[in-house]
Image (cartoon, rainbow over all chains, first blue to last red):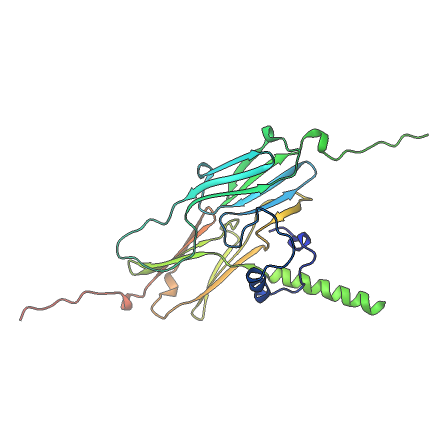
Length: 149
Length: 130
């Protein structure tokens, strides 16, 4: 979803195909993993990006709405919690596959310091919740005027 | 020297290609009910416009592009979703009426209904009195 997701871990092999991906999951490399990272297939998946003036968190929570997701921030750790209901059961139904997650979930990601929680905003769209956490004024990049001598 | 730069360019082109082809496998629930097979797939970030469902030669393909509006100059800090596209394919058995498949997408969840052909519907056989 990010235009250059590979930029995150430059040590990764190029031209990686599904079999490599599979092996990566089965035999994690020696590289250090984020302490709160999760195996693939967890719910919901989370992406975090940064612009000059804010940190943006994308929570991939299909089938959920704004009222189903609880987002909180404490000590730079963002927690997302909620519940996804299973499909409505009915009589005479034969199940072939049930891969989709349902039940309670709670996930946390560490964010950079210096975010202004009071101005944070969250919005839901097409099953993705976007949380915008503006940086505090003093942390925004600023231009320094160079005085003529 | 020249050869090295050449190879580098080649490698980055390959990497670019691999990235473009990399797809996410959406999680699905499949069940059968009321003379139809139902497929429910999680494709968060996919809109009605970016969802493509096709049936070709008895193969149903479900594809969608993650289309989330993002600001210019967004640098990834951490990413679990690492591709732009979802894709998954299923082979259909002949009793599925591929002409009358219907689909809807709601909050990133795709719901497909694949009805069986009339001739393949389960029917009750009346037992005649002797």
